[in-house]
Length: 596
Image 1 (cartoon, rainbow, N blue to C red):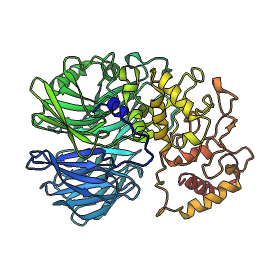
Image 2: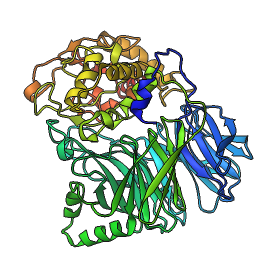
Image 3: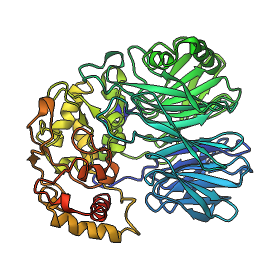
Image 4: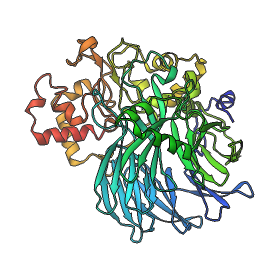
């Protein structure tokens, strides 16, 4: 079912529908049952592949993210629960236990010996190492920012963890996501930077031979003004190849073609013979079937280039995969998960509530069918808007979607030089949370409200002309966003430090520009540090809800942390009140701000 077919019968419904949203797939050891994780449906679904029907749907206590199977195939470990992070243990169609983890657990990994479970705690910025026999957490290993997916080497000695978006300030030359490499024996962590502009990592898998790690991500061209989209001028979509033995980035390959993007690459899989690499485009509803030996050979042929030039060449080469890749258009919408079994690729289409079965031959001829998981639901404006927000069909040549710069409708942590306020003055990407109730939009207030910003974005960033109904649906989706509880809260409440910080927030006058409940005056304010073309211009006062999630801070992303905001850059110190605070008081203030 195409996205546009969906839009034709989208109903004007106010109540939420019972969508399933398949987010992860596993195959039973006997190959007869497909285990399907339904994210918004909060279910673990068993689908009988012979009978072509759902045979069991196990309700889960919360919204799941990912799952992993035990070595003997008898137990499924399901991560989920959001800020009340849990791993639920399922056996024979029943929940038999649970393990407490961190905030928004993702990508559970069982060690090869079956003794440990590793879980990425996305918003705690760490990884849980759990003893499966006792269920006890042995360690919480700090990584960088939003660990979202991980993969372990066959010997269990190295855990590669992808940090979703960049850490640090945004107003510098190099800004990119990084991969953390954890030595599971010593718990030491090595940081492996990706090429400049690499961000938004979604998928990561180790090759069948255990020698390479592949990661899907975006390639942001944030150094250039957004004047055009041709040839990936603004954003391209990439696959990075990491060498396991040396723990170094070997190559970064573009997944796009010269005149068509492969937007928002996501899931990764390998054929059993190791000859075909499969990658999904969650924004363009496609698969790429890539000749892995040919890719490896071509990468090896570039090794003679001088150090540094190989990377520079690769992630700018839109023809790199020419002759070694086939693009396969899918029937479903939102392919965020996949697995390969023999000559069949199972694809979890998040927005179609269906699994797509793609059969392929040795010469990559394909045919596919959709396996509907439940009763087909009419689509609410909110759901349709979320689909549009993540769909690159709205964009010229499919280079990007709204979610390219606003993953999960938040921020990609980058500065972009948009054309709406001149050229040569990049601004940091804002979260879309509460955008429609905190006007104006854009840092310099060049859009009166979020409604006008959505429509201008379609026209001037996606370079498209779309029906008004599309923008209205996106409005509905963005208005439906709700904040996620901060990882700084203690059992849902302010910590002692944050309560002290709340008093300081009022005493030093922060509430003058950031009054509760949204912590913004919705006014423009001269903060005194706009420079260059923007010098002397007032900027929008942003709300502070979910401020813990929106670093870097200030309109140009110069402040890497909230502590930098109130110390290094003395934001809000117009009357000198911040400068008289002690170090402990500043820490309390920061703790409060990060708890909102």
